[in-house]
Amino acid sequence: MKTTIHAAILALMISGAAMAAEDPGISVSRPGDTPQTQGSAQLFSGEVLVGQLFRGTAPATISGGVVSFNASARTAWHTHPLGQTLYVISGNGRVQQWGKPVQEMKTGDIVLIPPGVKHWHGASATSAMSHLAFAEQLDGKVVTWMELVSDAQYLSEPSPK
Ligand code: MN
Image (cartoon, rainbow, N blue to C red; front, side):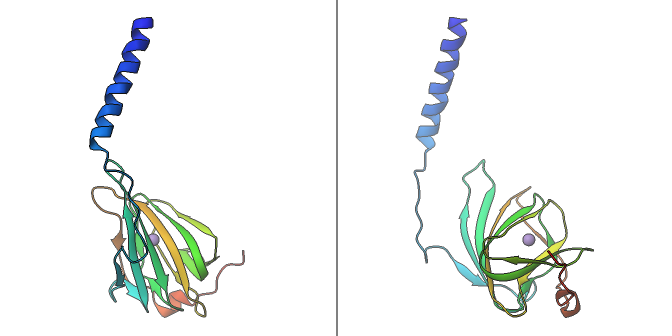
């Protein structure tokens, strides 16, 4: 028994040493260090700024970004292979799952989008909206893009909360 425990502790110490050898160190990036790009007209309607904030260190596959939508701007329809989590930083927005009513989201709200669910997200018609977005890759892929959201789809009445 004692030998087993010693072996376990030794194994932990070895793995700890291996981790230390590969430790890239804590990194702090400042506002402006990370790239910000205009959302392309194939993937977004309206004015959208996409900022890639971070990527996890392998084997982690998480990545996160901030997306800022002008009023009426939104993503195209899309899916995420392992789902996506949104945190609304500011403003009022909308999110819709294919075949379901539009839902409103506002500052401080958290939106959980399950794996493979077709959806879009964006600002409300009268307010800009920024959200953080977190997702994990599957086979190197974090999103599958589809068609743009039509004005009729976008302007459908949100469901009462
Ligand atoms: Mn999404």
